[in-house]
Image 1: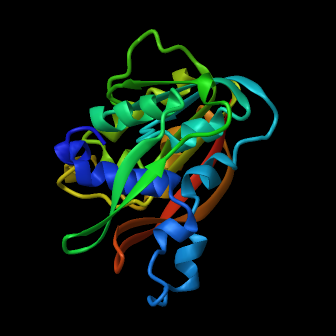
Image 2: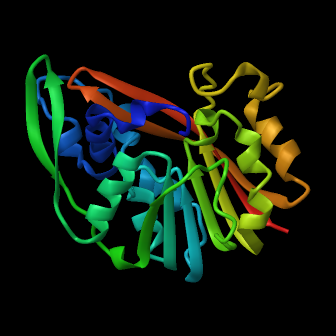
Length: 245
């Protein structure tokens, strides 16, 4: 998500706190609105993607493009330590507050000037997580390597996605696991067309990663981001699971 100030806005922060921590009754408030069943199936994306990792305990996890921390906290259930990194200062400040056990207030936009005050809170082994602001295309050199690396809805928001992909073999330990998820929404406002895949995203990733990684699983996972009570972003994210050779 590097290269755009949109992720510093209060509106996006509120939407992502609801995306990561809102329950069904909070996301679908408004009983008079007939929400399609497929929208309900798209809830819980931040935990569902992490669920593709093996369930045995490991030492270190890394969540790139962690936003407000939902997937990092989920990874902490089986990782002794997790580092969450995001380009947005606002997202990282929110994740750090939640990591400390604080309840974080935010607003859900229903329509026009109508808002509802809600609260986000992290549970589980949150003390295992640390969060830092950083650029996925230029990660600090002393980051080390990890047993599990997770990057959801990130690569198609980077100006130079290859800079991250080329770093992945060094980030994942031999035998370690990598999960990439992307809705493949390549947009000029984030990524210049010269950096888009030449062809479909899956074939592009497979060509770039197969020398160092074995593809374990490929599927699609829906996600839902509420903007107002009648306007949502519903997307299908291409999810690939890899094991480091």
